[in-house]
Structure formats: structure tokens, C-alpha cells
Image (cartoon, rainbow, N blue to C red; front, side):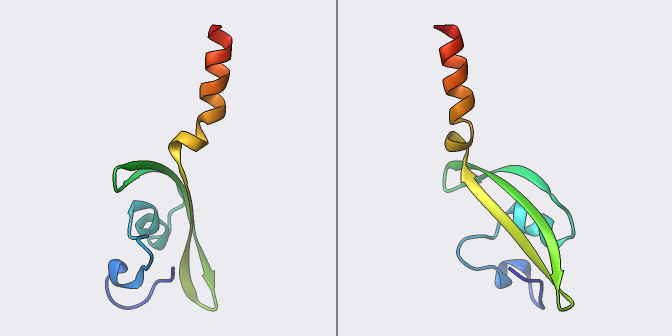
Length: 79
């Protein structure tokens, strides 16, 4: 996703118009919990520039998958 003229939503394809993309395009890096169509996802994001154009690098994963190991470990400790 790259920064260009027009609104960020106009520039972003494939359902990626979310807070993580907006933050990366604004120059911020971080990790955030986002809700997409009722599914909580964890997103990591950061901006980067290439040939003078700012882009947003975003990776997302379902929060259930991200925390599966933690949940399994907690259950094993309780048994």
C-alpha cells in the first residue's frame, strides 16, 4: 500500500483500510488489535520509503491463532 494523492481509503485495496494501514501511512510503527468483519486480528505495521514514496507494510493474523500457544500452555498448567 503506498501513499499517493486522494484519501487513504481510495489508495488501499483488498479490504486493508484499517487503523494499522492508516498509522503506517502516517509514519508510525506498532502492533494493534483490529476487528475485521467481527474477527479480531492482530496487526503489526510500519512505514517504509522506496524511491521517495511512503508505503505501509502490514501483516495480520487471527488473534485466536496468535494466542493458541499461550492458551494451550495455560490449560496444561491448570491440569
